Length: 219
Image (cartoon, rainbow, N blue to C red; front, side, top):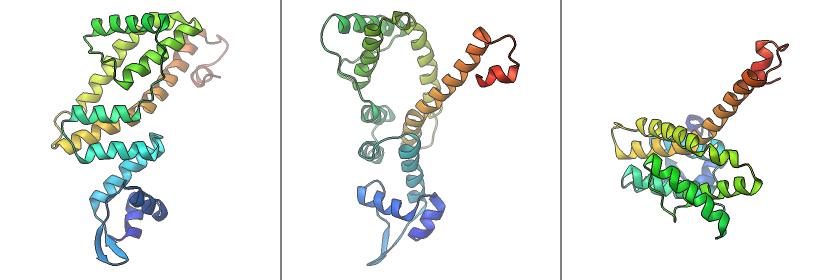
């Protein structure tokens, strides 16, 4: 297919396709003349993936490039998922001191109970410590008290994420599905959590005079 057909098939405008080609997010098509190239279904699939990462995942182009580079040279799904996690995780630096040690100890205790391995140099570890340090500084220690419960729920979600990619026919499909699940699963879970919070709040604190539709909508 030509670029115009690729645009129709993928839903991505031609100028955006050209930009993705220049940025290296989309491999070049098969050259048929100095000014023409032919594209295939692999290009449609890649464009849909890039669009999802950029528009839904809200990832910067440079980060998308890192994730795609890992996808294009797949080792094990675990390795590539680690690469993708590091690319999309922005840790908040936590200075050495009493606060860091307190929240780090809390995380180690929870990790031990869950059977998790914590690597201090991983960006995701620093990201967790950053949030916990902020919670501690704000004095909202009740969230620290809920950490075991949060970790239990995170385990359930993570197991579900992994279950969705077990048994796929190729490493490439497994890796792609895992990355999509990681990047797009976060905004999905965040939205579902807010929906659940609205309903939990209505059940706990709802106005007795408010009808069910009013309570469900959070009005």
